[in-house]
Image (cartoon, rainbow, N blue to C red; front, side, top):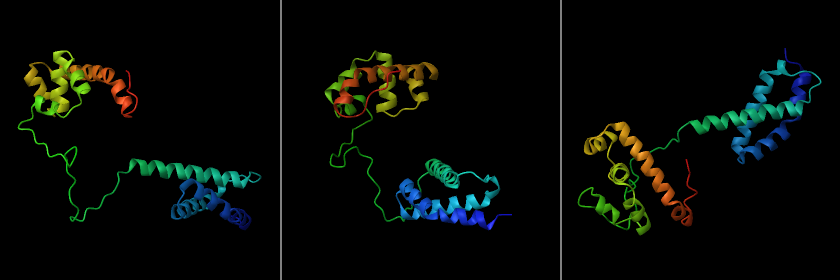
Length: 187
């Protein structure tokens, strides 16, 4: 049975819990929710509190763990987007101001859109890697389609793609960094 003394101790720290929740969430509504959840857990698990323990630290530990658990749950949950049907669909063109429609899904047509450095890096790949990379990443072909064209097993296609992409990353490392596209990952 929970004591009145315990309830008083917990309620004395309510303002402090809300202030800490505000710092964690940076949002008044979320801070209220976090404070309420912390308070509920503290009252529900009052039997876990050992007399003589510093109650403020105990409450803040509950709050921190509650905040972390809720954050992890939100991170795993996909974003919910409501579509009313009146929104205009976004174009899938790279730049809506440039209306480019290649005659076919041809490697040479798409290469016209690439910078010279990128085009040169692709052209310098060994042929079996270049064909696999272009078919997968430029022409959007499946592993099976690539394997059929290259007349090799799917595992070989996957290996050639991995190695070809790795070579491209190495060749285009400086190019990417100059454009602020992050540091390449060397594996």
